[in-house]
Length: 328
Ligand SMILES: [Zn+2]
Image (cartoon, rainbow, N blue to C red; front, side, top):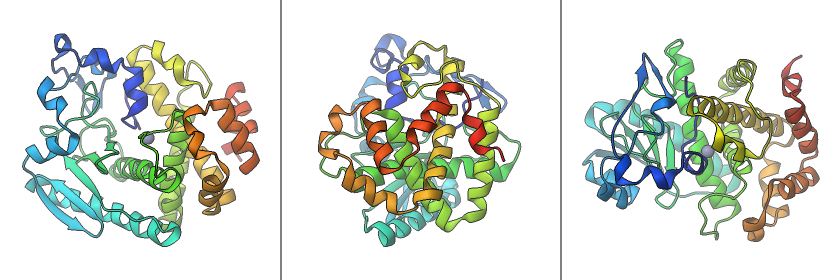
């Protein structure tokens, strides 16, 4: 089965029994590839190279690769010499987004984008094969695939769509860094405990930039996300994602990807109504200092006050009527 848009971090760690996968008994490398499609059958069996490598920080592991670097505005790009062009392209996109957020929200920090080939790839979640993008939050580093011809995000049907799919995930990962910096800068927790809301926030940042800077891409992306909702129905329709623990890997990949598309569309809907004002409203009106105690129910209740419509959105999700929101 195909893994489409997958954001590689805490949810996947929880969903794949991360701690078990780290044990030496499971160490091995099995990548199952069917053309451009990488099966999640391999997902649970692909482990990190060595335990000692895992003990190093992502930045230390990156530095050990001995890659070239280039400074693009606020972004430091890391790449093998053969990947320079793509790495700089990714860094230019990230820096353009950074310029936007510095202007609009007065958020500015240097960060890194590592564009890695299959032979250099590693992840904080050892079970994940090439190439689900992921951020190292403490390092402010985003790990991206350098390849546009192979990896989990590549379908091989439309080169522009493939590129945009990968690029949007870069913006999404940067969105996690931005959300942390803007909304809860003093928290020592990388991610919020309510996973779907953490993902929605990352998408909101990504979509805001897309909307303001790349109108044509925005339109194409929305149409593609609606198609993704049409072509698959998850086994459970709920924002409580604990059910995913019990899914077999191929269904897990489809399901997690599907929810990301749903949240992309929710972010788009929200932005069309609230625009940039929502960044400040969320910052001012949610109890960020108490985020450790948040639940799906408490977050939904608070969001309903700030941006009415969340309860109706969840009802549409639960009843299976979610598509009607996007059909004219
Ligand atoms: Zn994410």
